[in-house]
Image (cartoon, rainbow, N blue to C red; front, side, top):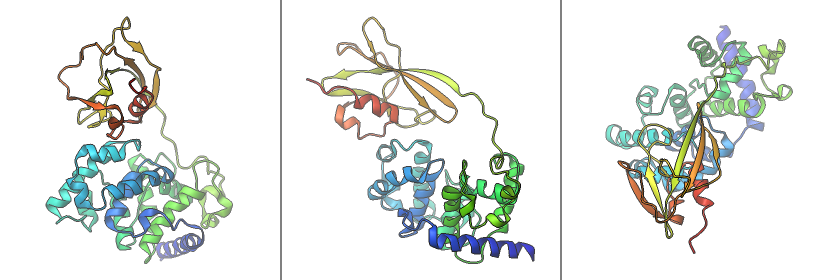
Length: 338
């Protein structure tokens, strides 16, 4: 059967390469428990491994198991997540942990169907958790593997299109081995991250280059297809810096929108005759570019922000909260009180 030969041949070459050249010292590999893999997979969504490693170990020290995570306050989780970006992932993770406590006896479920019912977990993430924690061969389709499969199988089009995604899932299923599900999943991710890169792929070192469609037709730069870029929405954001001695006033963001459920500086309008404009900060979000103007308010100024949760924090203590990166940068540059 051709599909069996394809799977056996592709997987055998890939695993042989991974045994010698793959990444074997990632922190979530030792041990590969469902909880540790889940935390890693959520952090790795749209984030590079080198960045995730910096956050993963401290996060696991703070929340070593699912029960600890479920019982933690969202502010504590946001504090540990601060700087990693895409903060809704942390909100979903917290809610998923609480649901596991309620519905699954305090453990992550062991089927893809049950995992898919939890917030923040899609098909690829669910399969990655199971394949790595239970060593079962299941297809995954993260960003790296979409690129590998589009090139190897010659699948044109933007992977975000449903018809293209269906073809990629089929290509992933056709290449699954019979055994070593955990190693194969990691090998697929490593291949995309280290060799089959978006730019300047190292085809000469690739273990599956011999039958790669893109290499044969010199289409590495064309596959996978790109989504047509849309201009980002520009948004002006004015933030008010209220100081009171060694304290600073912070605002809890709403549960929806940018920086959901995080602490920030209050939004508002400043009077340039009395407030001092600080340096404008440009901050990129997925579909939004923020132009942030912080205003240093006079100590005698009354807070003009109403109907929002506000709280005073000591300056140094505020940096331990769950703060978006630009807010953390603004506070960090403020001088200590005399």
